[in-house]
Image (cartoon, rainbow over all chains, first blue to last red):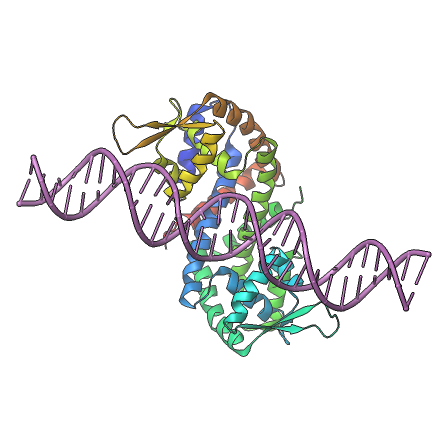
Length: 161
Length: 161
DNA sequence: ATGATTAAGCTAAGCACTTAGCTAGAATAG
DNA sequence: CTATTCTAGCTAAGTGCTTAGCTTAATCAT
């Protein structure tokens, strides 16, 4: 407990001895761990000329399977961002030729975002590297511990409060 | 495993059957859990006329103990943000009278950020409410499970890679 | 002493998100 | 059919961070 969060808890203990600040130990480490993980992943993305949001869009299209086409609304749902954020991401990806906007044949209002061959090639090259980075991040934990962590996170993450 | 992350893993399984995507189960849940936690905390902050960044500054000053004064550089370190982000936070907090900038008597370049009485009163009122929200978020887990989660997070968060 | 380098804190500009508001097409009511 | 309402996707403006670059004071070398 000599990490940053541990030090913070000791400060609270000294300043507010009556207060039970133990929840901060968990939530604090959760936030900080998420931040450091995010920054390590960013390194891998950069090596492939991507950032987290570009990787997110391309990977979502890839894992959706052939014909690798989704609507902006579907992309927004998957990425938990607004449809306007999707539009801005697509503007950049389309300019780079990694995705293409097509008219939705079944809905005149709608657009289908297609993964181009270039985009598919890029994400398929970046994906194994990304997984390798994730494995490295988790390497201090055994397989059982990783499973336990995922389970614990799932139990607090999916509570709609 | 019928949550959002579980669905994503199934998609990868179908599209790239050879690939071991198990790290995504852990990292994905970590990111999403951090996001949902953040959004629940935001509700509490708002009830007290604060947001996460304002709470962060005021709480850091409070837990530093009397005389409740820190330099902008110290605040930046504690909050893991740039000193320029601190300056912008302080501009707003100072305008509201929650903190005050004072000259550092020992360093002509330096500033000391002081928690005002108003600021101290506000953060002391918000703090128990915040802890209550954190407790609610963690309530699906037993005390032992919470401790286990904090331990696992600590082991992957503090690895400098 | 004095000139060069380092350090603290700030503003300015850039970036990725948000919400608000727009346009065009689809669905629904009469 | 036509008028209204709803939906998909977009741009515009606002927010809070980042990095770059500035000013001022401290430190260090000679």
